[in-house]
Length: 138
Image (tube, rainbow, N blue to C red; front, side):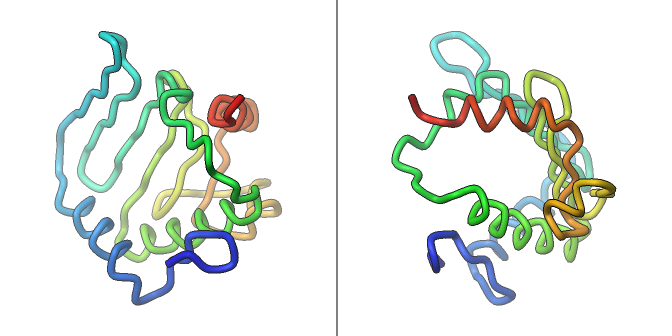
């Protein structure tokens, strides 16, 4: 549900529940996304961990996205919490290098001061910053 400029995920949100349950039903496999015969992303699934490797993050840009950083952070916190409740971990990589971990296996240290969440771990400030830059429309 869109509320106060961010996608709000509350405890009874049916879409996020469906998404997390769908993710939980996956046990093993790889999905590759290609564009113009070039790899754009690879998703690796192994039991309770899903790793999304964004090889061409600019392919996933949302040019009309006007939500701010704090709104995105709030949505991430809510989704990370939902993942943790279901003992799932989502790892986001940029060109093979870990950037952010959400959910059950997130172990934030310094990033907890920024995110105020036990469910978001910033693995690399450099890679996270690069992802943000690549997602931003020109």
